[in-house]
Image (cartoon, rainbow, N blue to C red):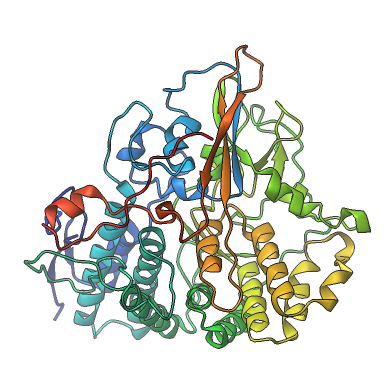
Length: 526
């Protein structure tokens, strides 16, 4: 007899402004099969994707915008202003400047309008749905085991992934010696409504749950072939698990998981012979046709969310937006003196038609109709090799060089790799791998988290100050922006802005149980 489960989808953890336990009644679903649960997961467990999302004040309410600010806080971006425009207009520079400048109240517009952090709400809302799915799937023991395993594995992966994002945005990076006392984020893994105020679990507790979810996801997804890159598979789950182990300093475990991912299938795209050059203009639509982050890329294993960089970086007149930083771009020409050409310079970037030395990230198409993969959350094969190489190097293994070469042969012209890599060892090798990670994974939501974890790395700590230049609008239509100064973010440990503030509505509602991060300083232009 068919088991009809009256499933009230409730997102009860941190999903409503000030109401930690407020029920969401918009999705009342009768689940009578795994197929029904699958539909709930597609609609509410996975991130919502929309290639036509716009970056405007509507980011406050848009369900398809996910943490665009993470892409403007690191050292890979700079402001780029051209022409005359209103500083208070709803362009990317204006809306993102409070984050770009690490302001005390980042969710306050230049106009002084405060709004609620939408990212916190959306991620916890997803988690609420996933908790219900993981509870209700047990009711369908009569359904095919593969269907149950797939749905369970996908839900476990997504929950682990969302807690990974939350703890790395709103809490301190993982440090083994202090993780048990460092404040993480609220944790809820039950579908039941608990009549209580919530507090923040420790960073250690959150990471344990992330690892548990991802390990379970790997087991449940084992042997399951997904028909699309929009549904997570075992290989992608292993890569994220290996990344989490890197963050925890569990080098041996990170190496094991990344190697298993590689063995399962992590194809690399040889950029030799691939035409990724920008051969047209955005206005005519005559653009390069091959992109690293696309539905046809052999390296994209899983993707969801939104395309952030196209909203932040684009050509135009009378507009303020962002470009790739000079510091990042210089890394791609680092070995040009040796006659070595890094193919990623033309493959991952396009030059501005307004200024020939300004470049935009172009790992995806700028045409909405062609956007089939998303940089807000993408897992690529290349990361498996970088994770493995870093884990090996941190263990003092010389095999890290060969692991890295496997990737680099597909990134440099004619496979000619810098000869200096062969003599690297210890900290020098680790720094080379970190630099290569920056070149390869730029604008894929890695750099901000990487800067934080490098700063607390016990064996080879690497802290840095980040400087962001500011530009005023030009005085004439075709002119360049006027340099005004810069914001400075002091190294991790000396500046509270390396953590996003917990939303004020959660602090208020939970009546002292929820503790805020250290207060950010008022930051002016230097």
